[in-house]
Amino acid sequence: MSKKVGFVGVGTMGKPMASNLIKAGFQVTICPHVNMAPVKALETEGARVVANPKEVAAASEVVVTCLPDAPQVEEVLFGPNGLLAGAKPGLTIIDTSTISPIATQQFAARAAEKGCTLLDAPMSGGESGAIAGTLTFMVGGDQAALEACRDVLEAMGEKIYYVGGPGMGEVVKICNNLMLGINLIGVCEAFTLGVKAGVDAATMAEVVQASSGGSAVLERYFPKTILKNQYKPGFMLKLMCKDMGLALDTANELGVPTFAGVVAGQVLDMVKNMGKGDADFTVVATLYQDVARVVIGKEE
Image (cartoon, rainbow, N blue to C red; front, side):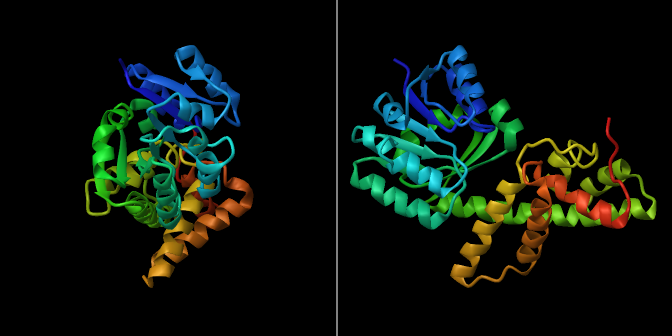
């Protein structure tokens, strides 16, 4: 019999992730979301819909969560209609949200008191990776629990890395996004400079990607957003700002200097506060273009 898998948080990322679980043959149970359209779509695909996370847990051997931040994760886990209220001992919860490592460690300890295991498994790869089932998961928590539900993660992603105890998946993820944010600012500054000086942006991108300045931002994001001057999310700027804040706060707690990270975070926050938080995080390029009075990309 196929494994019973619950899913809470079927939004931009969660909906295609849940779809891939259904396609892989798992018995998937979901509950209402702030946007009911993906819930109805998943029901059509074969998911069972119940009233709340408590009922999701009661119907599942493994539950995947995909939520915006720690307060939502805490409510889904420990609220009166939360997962732990309906969980049988032995339930494994895979939280793919990006939240504070300290919060994750606290949540894992509280779940253990109820006889359940919480794995932190934040992911990288964006909406396109969620749709294609090619996400990368960085997993913290009990390694034996990971191996027991590795098949669930493999239905949603290509690469699953075990990185240490509770919270270590979150640490790796916020470090990754710290680098992503800093790199994005570098790409925006360099390409605004290059185009203002008279270089064709597409030509410059091809050359730089084949040189020492190449990066994931340039390869994965730049051609789809900045070069086309289109900023439909993807990965929303407000979530990128949240992740940068988590990284900077954690660094501050540990006494780690983040000179470039602080500046990158300020620039990202500036663009978010201009009303662009729901756009793709690469929309920060528009700030540079507006100030320099130049356009890097052209709408198709």
